[in-house]
Amino acid sequence: MTGRTPSVHALLWTAIFAISFGFVEAAVVVYLRAIYYPEGFSMPLVTMADGHVALELGRELATLVMLLSVAWLAGRQAWERFGLFCTAFGVWDIFYYVSLKLLLDWPTGLLDWDVLFLIPVPWIGPVFAPVLVSCVMIVCGAMIFLRVRAGVPFHPPLISWIAAAAGILVLLYSFTHDTEATLRHGMPAPYRPEILFIALFLFATAFSQALRRREPEPPS
Image 1 (cartoon, rainbow, N blue to C red):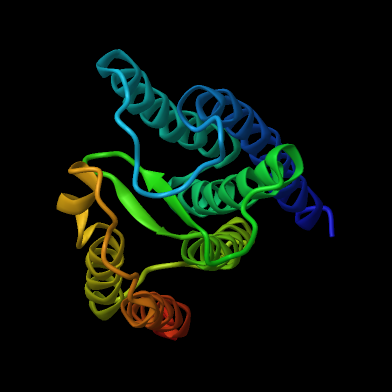
Image 2: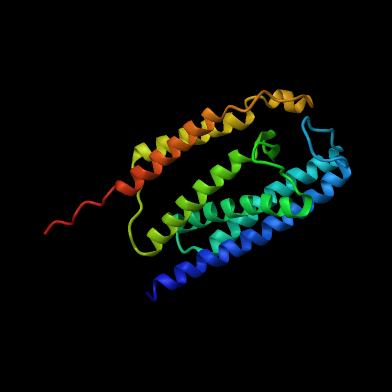
């Protein structure tokens, strides 16, 4: 029990940071929407000042650095830090939308479109898509962290690495396959949820195979 409690505390404080950070990000978006979408956010995107675009890119990069930093400080080794980063990212993303709902009464539903990320190109999709991905990140990240912190080896086999890499590529395609329309300030093509579900299936395959792998028994 004594070893378990610090692990839970690390997850709890990581989640508290992510929740607070989600509110900070939402507060920034409140100001941005007041400037660029005074009548309410909707697609297509409006043209932002060049200086503001650069600031947004810098802010998103800083967001990743902050989430990585808290995971690095709370974890003791690589897989622990990876698990904490996934957990922090998922909690931050979900509570970003929770905070926007409280502050702006937006999104009105999970089918509302949003700009998910800007690096290296705009990621566009309905709110339910990043929320589903975040839920997967929280569950998998927390399980990896707790497993490794408990001393259980975590060494994903080759099939897990292949499935995870394929899942990332498919997920990126689902959010960026009509980037050209977004950059031209046009309406993007309808989102294809089946592509998202393929990516989630690949992630589930990668994770399940990693959990099933067992280290060989030492010779007696």
